[in-house]
Length: 96
Image (tube, rainbow, N blue to C red; front, side, top):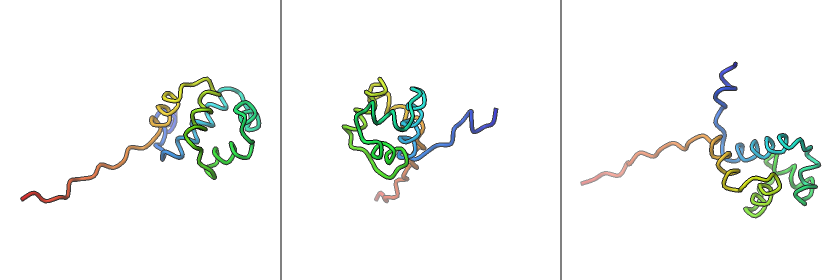
């Protein structure tokens, strides 16, 4: 098994959000046309979210999670699990 399959490359938050959305859609066996129909959003809107051309409001994230039958906290946990950690900031402040 290639290393990329065992340890997926960390993604930015936006990339991870889109990847999880696409993965959940595919797990359901839905096309890009079926997800918006089931979630009651326009096809262009959902496609633009998946491609990063548009960013959803929190209520849309919540509704998409419910459409997949997922709790929003588990949906976001999946996103967080794919996100690369932020670099820690060193304390550059001098102390007297």
